[in-house]
Structures are given as structure tokens and as C-alpha cells.
Image 1 (spheres, rainbow, N blue to C red):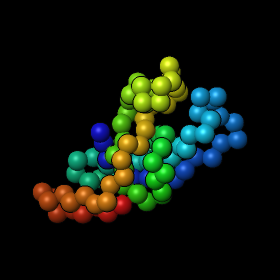
Image 2: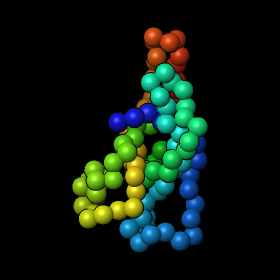
Image 3: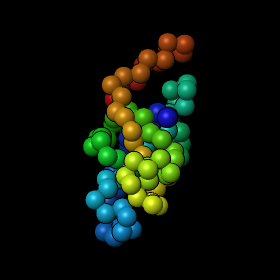
Image 4: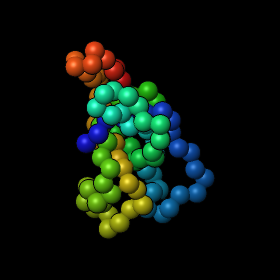
Length: 97
């Protein structure tokens, strides 16, 4: 599991048939030093997170398929938890979701 900050949601007029009804969010991964990545990623969100939340996410499409009972799904990541706060004591940084 990795940390990320939700920076937006995805709106699409046409989706792959296996993505119907799945909320998609744009996240920016956070490295162990508390610094956000420059490259945003689109992931599935079944927990109804909001823009600005800090979340746990997995980068594994196989796990998502097992949880949903779907044979294959065109996703590479999924939000699996919403974080209240993170305290990086070693570098003196504090993140709040």
C-alpha cells in the first residue's frame, strides 16, 4: 500500500463496460519523505473519498479483480483506505487529509 493525495475526480461520457458505476479519482502519490509525485494517476474509488483527502492505495489490478469478483478490469490502482493524518517524525512534516 502507498500513500497519495486526491487532487481531482474523473468525469467521462463513455466508459469501458466494466467501469460502469465505478467512481474514478485522480491522485498524486506521496513518497516516504512526504513529497508528492509530479505524475498524477487515475484510480478506482469505492470508499467515496473527496478531493484533498490523503488515501492508501494499491497499484495492483489483480487484487481489485479478486475483491470485485470480476475476471479482468482495465484499472491499475484502487483506493483502499482514507487516512486522517500522517506524522513524519523523522523529517518534521505533518500531513492531514
